Image 1 (cartoon, rainbow, N blue to C red):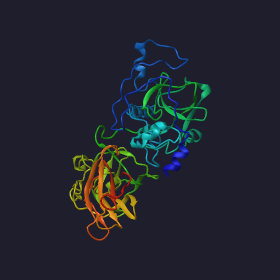
Image 2: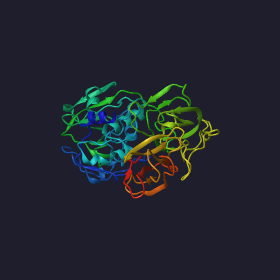
Image 3: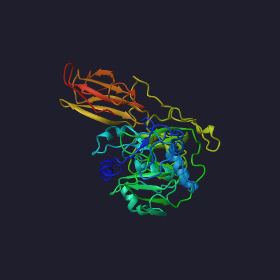
Image 4: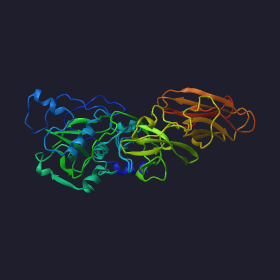
Length: 438
């Protein structure tokens, strides 16, 4: 699915930055920051130059022209919160679930090779999230820049290239490139807020009027407040294809579905005990409340242990309620302890002279261990653990050997927020084979 989506998106949000822009230093996607005031830039080509002192306010990420609806102004405010976030190609494209998601590699752009390590936005992903937050409706939905231009899918007013900048208001969705390869939100005074391309960051920029093709102004009612529990919660990452529900049990209505399994960084406000859920052999009775979707998700679909560290009980929020009493308290597997194989699966494998080396993983406890099968006495097995994606690692954790029969396994090690691999040999001094990192 990810490969298919990448192929479809190959022409979207390529390097079409504005002629001049100011931006914060690139940072990994993290919790949204407050809008920042930007330094002055050169006005867009063809516009009247104003004194530098008068341009300073124009470079703030905020509506810069009167007349926009409250909803459009809210969409601008949402996008502005992400100024300084790293661009991620394919970010914001989880099917049915808007929000900052895991980036992909654009096969045409070497700058994107690090994007899978980022949870953020590409150009249309940022626009989608901004208008979703302002309306609580996924009006843009998971589509490419080109497809949203060809068929917006929502009530709107369209502005043509020939009409120029004059009729535009803050929050309008502007399209660029003769084959429609970029999109941004208009701020006013010739400025846009945009996610430009890999290696860059969400920023305020001068609009490229020489590449401008037209714009849409959505006709959609807004909501208040846009940010519920503003400033609270922490971002956690989804995995799989979760259903976000109205309440903390599977009998409640589904409000959002992640149809393509792309991981999304969601804001977790609090957690409580709900229905015990089983997925692929894993069991958990803890659910997390996601205020940006007004929904609950089983912790089985959040990367990490059964109880999310640092996320409080919902009992501290009277309007939500619930406690963690009765929760499965397996928040850590305990380094060097006996593996908990309930619900575990083989995340990665390799072979060495007829033996199979496996990295076993338990998603409920976020623990991993190594196993070698089909070997002989003396074969070795261990795991390595890395906090930087495999650049460096703690070596030979849980080292052991086959002492009888043909199989052996290591002790388990905490893999939450880290990556691990299993390595084994066909006996001391033999060939070493390692699995991929997971």
